[in-house]
Amino acid sequence: MKKEKKQEFTLRITKANKTQMIIILYDMVLEYLKDSLKSLEEEEYKEFKWNIERAKDCLDELLNSLNLEYEIAGILRGLYFFYKRELTTAKVYHEKKNVLIVMEMIQELKESYEKISKEDTSAPIMENTQSVYAGLTYGKDSLNVDLSDQNTKRGFCV
Image 1 (cartoon, rainbow, N blue to C red):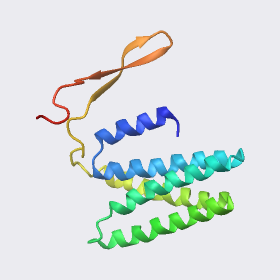
Image 2 (spheres, rainbow, N blue to C red):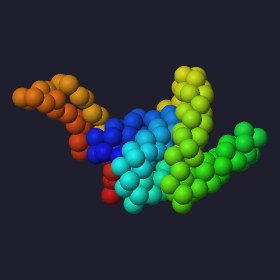
Image 3 (cartoon, rainbow, N blue to C red):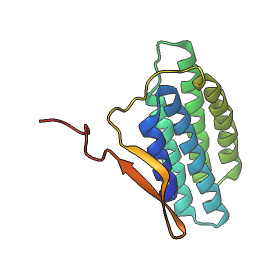
């Protein structure tokens, strides 16, 4: 995953509520899997395996976030374990089809969560995050980002 994409995910995470966090994790899985397919096509197997492991790490985070008091959580748990098995198979045998299966299924889940997130009006999980304004200042051939409130009300007060 490129540095710019990581920064984009970081910014999204700082503003996300619980439902949006799930969508972000799905996006991260999809991004790592896209990168893994690109690495596989270029026959860079070490990079392929690394991207598969990062996708599995995101799936672990999704597994850890499940509230097993609800029936749907058990279903999602089974799906996430299935995805991890498919990705392990892909990693061992360098199989593109296993990655594509997981990508297709994750995309469907993501679309479902996007519909749900429209109804979720809860507050962002993170508090006291930095405000970021893009497009307020311009440089030659570049767009500068302004980070406002850099030191106000952030961190711990001792």
